[in-house]
Image (cartoon, rainbow, N blue to C red; front, side, top):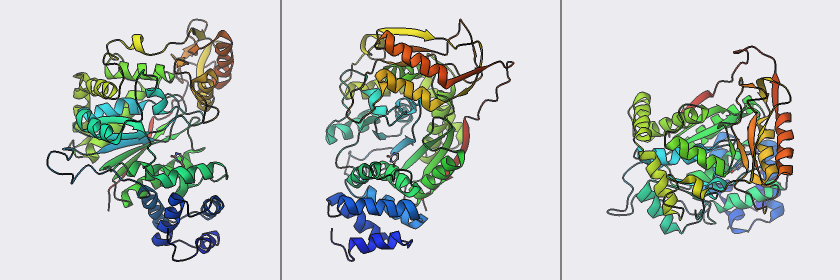
Length: 453
Ligand code: URA
């Protein structure tokens, strides 16, 4: 990277609280991507941004520079017969427990005429990762060639895969340095990191699911709302119309958490074996926003009607099956999930220490129970056990007693099951309250829509 000013002078300006120009930000991000900035300089820059923040224009410039630091996928202007005939749409979540929205939403949008090139991540801390879930499916290849990925997006309308080295490489290096320099929790750095990767997929519209509550990445409702508003604003100013939903994570979204168990839940939803529930409501609301943004529906009611029809007809399930088979998974996964998905050797109920109703959950601790079982990682290099997890997790307000457990634990051993059981009893509060005596959190707390300028 050729710098017009010395990089240390740009870092000094940020250190002293000045706003950086888009050109300066472009040079700094170029220097992160091509290695001409040293680790020390990247760390110092991250800390200067962490301490002094960035204004809206700087955050947009940082997001665009991260997006453009590698390949930006194009789906149009490719020539006769190669352009995608519908809108390119995607969704991203800040992460949670029992959050398998992507597994259902991607194929559902595809069944409604959208195209979903979804680049997903692995579990982080207490939260599950879409890639880890998909790897519970034997043979599923999360790293297909670029040509295979493009062809599958065209054929199935959806492909959920991992990040490649070519996509937003500046973020890969910056994130690794932030991780060891105490500079992760910075709004402009978080926003540009999330959006830089997503917008590099060449989207026409994006929907963000920002979580709030005891299992959310952001610690308070105010911080979650600020993140949702900033993401919608910045993505839209960077040219991708974005809607952010603020949704509840004060309990797991699905009644299960783990990898194979969440794939099983997704299949049951897609096959309409399960009706209602928080997971379906959040997925349907996010999907409706995407159909509207992609002009695949005229209004909200029209979007919901189209979604309901494509779920009931089996079209969404069929797209999921096509994606799985197209990426090397079993062709009969939907017909015979029990034959293919790994099952833990120990499956047993966990009962509360006393009867009553569930009044509060430490959702983060529920997620960490899955990590303890081996379903998530303590260190990035850890292998994970796809078979373990929790099912039948009681919801806030549910009655539990000697008959109705807090959850079922799926474990590799009796000792692991016992450890997870103790963690669950600690994480889920049970008290004497009358039916209806527990105030349930609002599931969808806000919808923030932003058009591109
Ligand atoms: N996820 C990301 O991709 N980046 C962040 O900075 C935080 C969460």
